[in-house]
Every structure is written in structure tokens, then in C-alpha cells.
Length: 158
Image 1 (cartoon, helix red, strand yellow):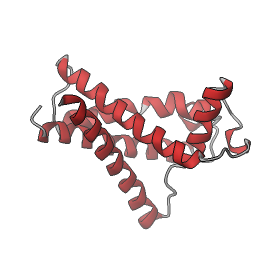
Image 2 (cartoon, helix red, strand yellow):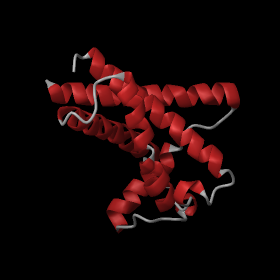
Image 3 (cartoon, rainbow, N blue to C red):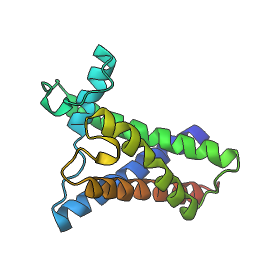
């Protein structure tokens, strides 16, 4: 039953992050994440072993890259949920919204120090036109997903 909870919590928390990004789009005209690029990166990483791809935006689009990107996005959220569950079981975190926020804040190291650099955006998005904005958006998205994970684990009685 726990694996079902982990998957469900990952999916719902990812959906909350997607709603957050749509909210930012409606209010501030900030575009949500481009999951097509994520799909393209994923396919090229698997098919060509090309994890570091600083010119990903200029690569030829790949069939179904948007759908693949969405699957990767939700799969990563399930992985975050699993990591939270493991940390909960080792009593590093409690199932609470506060620990969810902390988890979300810590998890932002993934886009800052892995995903942005492998896509050619640099560490902490320093190669983008607005690094502070890119980093802030990552913080917001990860806080939303972490908060959702912590809150949902609490609701499920962990």
C-alpha cells in the first residue's frame, strides 16, 4: 500500500506544481516549464549518451518529446515522493508541511546544480538573461512540490 501512496503523492504534488506555474502564467505572464525540451533532453541522453547538452534548444525536435517530457516530469515527482518517504522512515523528516517545505527547498539543488547546467543554462542559471528570476521560479516550484508532499504524507497518516 505504501508504494501506491508514494506514487499518488508524487502525482498530486506534481499536479500542484503545475497549477502553481499556471497561476504564475495567469497573473504575471511567466511561462511555465517547457517539458518538450525536457523530453528532447531525456531522449538524447538515452539514445546518444549525451547528458550535457548546452545547445538543447537548437537540437532538432524529437517525435513525442512533449509527451515524453511530461512523463519524465511526473516520474521525477514520484521519485521525490519516494525520497521523502525514505527520509521519513529514517526519521530525518516528519510528515508535515514544514518538513515538506524544507525538503522542497533542499531539492532545488537538482535544477540549480544539475538540470540547468546540463541544458547549457549554467549553475544557478548564470547563463540565462535573468538568473535570479530563474532561480526564484525553481525555488517556488520546489517549495510547492515539497509542501504538497509533506502535507499529503501527513494526511495519509505517516
